[in-house]
Amino acid sequence: MVMTIVAAVIGFVLGTGVGYALWQSAMKKKGALMIAEAKKEAEQIKKDRILEAKEKFLNLKEEHERAVNKRDQQLAQRQNSFREKDERLKKSIQDFKREQRDLERAKETVAKKRESLDAKSKELDKLKNKQIAELEAMTGMTEEEAKEQMIQALKDKAKLDAQAHIQNTMEEANLTASQEAKKIVIQSIQRVATESAIENAVSVFNIENDDIKGKIIGREGRNIRAIEAATGVEIIVDDTPEAILLSCFDPVRREIARLSMHKLVSDGRIHPARVEEVVAKTRKQIEEEIVQTGKRTAIDLGIHGLHPELIKTVGRMKYRSSYGQNLLQHSREVANLCAIMASELGLNPKLAKRAGLLHDIGKVPHEETDLPHAILGMQWAEKYGEKPDVCNAIGAHHDEIEMTSMISPIVQVCDAISGARPGARRMVADSYIQRLKDLENLAYDFDGVTKAYAIQAGRELRVMVESEKVTDAMAAQISYDISQKIQTEMTYPGQVRVTVIRELRSVNVAK
Image (cartoon, rainbow, N blue to C red; front, side):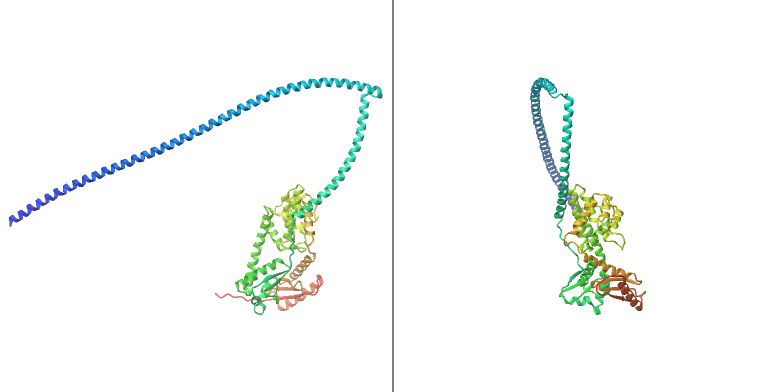
């Protein structure tokens, strides 16, 4: 048993020693292999670095050679340039020397001719003195006396010729000035051949089908009454297929009514509360459009630096008319005429165009005033920083003030040209619109009146009153008083019906 254990131990020790020896041998072989691979990898890295270094050296060498070649080319170009300049300089020197020799020869020739002329001059002086002596002996007058007599005769003849020339020149100048003035005016009119657009008092609102008319009228006419009350425009719904007429003398109201109805019809919700909301938004939109119109007009005419209030006033001209002629169209036309005429006369065309555009701004006042529109426009122009020449042209174009600028008569003439051409204006339309405005303003004199609209071409005055201040009995009395005042203070054709509307609204909000 002991022998067996001893043998086992001996065997274990021998096995362990043999295993260790084999492990040491394997590790040596593995180490040798790793060293060989490391040497091989190091050799490869060395070769790669050598190749990279050679490639970089070649690139640097190539760049250096290119730089050297470029420098050699530049040097060669400079040498050629210097050589050409040297040749040109040599040629210039040769030309200068040749011209100097020619000048010397010319001087010698001139000197010889001068000597010859001096000799001939002396000879002529001798002959002249001899002839003078002979003439004095023949006429019995000295040389000075003959000179005085001849000078006096020449003066008398020169005076007669000068008077005749002055008379002919003045007649020709008057004729030429008249012809040139006519020519400038005709050319200005021909170069501004714009079409005349006359506003009327009716707009047409097109609809897709006649069923929409019922929606616009509403139950018992409440929708159409709400639209008329909010806009001040008469809505005419008749048998005309797919069309509704909007009647009002004020183009701004008609446009607000037209756009509001378009929005209401497109939306489909038509009731009094919605009508008031849409009309309020549309009125704000029209105000913005007025500003944009003023800016576009200034840009189209090349006018810069206008005050924002003047731009807004120019935009309002689109919705105003003077004797039936659209005010913005008229002002643009006058501006172009002024620029052309100022250019023909050698004046500042930009300043003239500016004065022409602004000459009628007093016709679109924010509130009623007794001042003439020319004076009002001049005051606005001064207030908003326009130049004195422009202000004077605005104020003097109807002779309310004295003209102090050369541009003022140009604006006056161009205003007359634009307004006097055939078809430009209609006196009847302007007086008609003024009568309707006076009719509306008359109603505002009564206490409790909030809105007043002249409709049906001035045959009806529709008045809105506050229900809190005016009772039903007072509404009837106001209607009667207005009709009596119209009879006594206004001139009008036919009859005018006065309708006073008192409406009580009770509004609550469900939350």
